[in-house]
Length: 136
Image (spheres, rainbow, N blue to C red):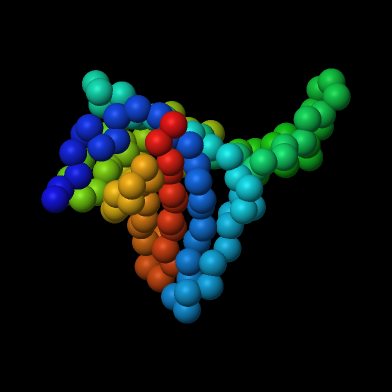
């Protein structure tokens, strides 16, 4: 059964995010307790946010070092989405990392009860990115 738009519409919270190497080893880029949300609208817009559970909050104006730490503990982008078979394609229009703007990100989607498992091979062609979202 192919993925349908109704499978994705709405808001989802991050359940788990890990990167799996070619030998099956797993690492959690933002820690095992990372937080996040992804939202899909019926008119084809989407946004994704992931962050470490605990983020540094400076008192007053942040130093350049503190800004770099805040940047490295937060990831987000927004744009449009479409389905292609069992994959969702995100066309990125806005992102914390300006290098992502204009890119398309494809993720295979597997439905598992109230969860969706998004996966895709990373740029090295060996490592697999796996993000599990739970319906809100």
